[in-house]
Length: 128
Image 1 (spheres, rainbow, N blue to C red):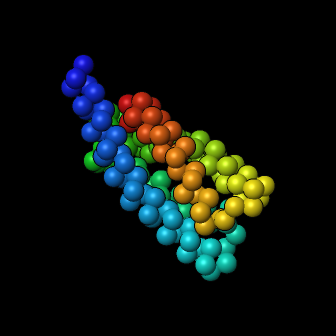
Image 2: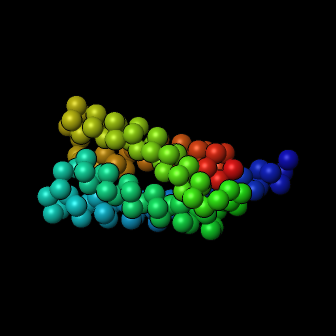
C-alpha cells in the first residue's frame, strides 16, 4: 500500500513537471497569438493542439508506462485533454465575457481545475 501511494505521488509530481512545460508552451503560444491579433478563443485552441502533443510526448516517455500502441494512446490523450479543453474553454468564455475578467489572467485560474482532471484521465485511461 505504501509503495502504491509513493508511485502515485511520484507520477503526480512528474505529471506536474510535464504540466509546467506544457503550460509554458501553451501560454507562450496563446499570448503570442493574442499579441498578433488572433481572437482569444482561436489562440486558445491553437495553443491547446500544440500543448497536448507536448504533454503526450513527455507523459509517454517520462511519466506513465504506456501499455497500448502510441497511436491509440495519442488519440486517448487528445480525447482526455479535449474534455478538459471544453470545460476550460467554457470557463474561459464565462470568466472573460460574463465576469469581464482579463483574457490574460483567466487561463491561469482555470488550471486549478483542468490539471487534476487531466492527471486522472491520463493515468487511469489514456496511459492505462
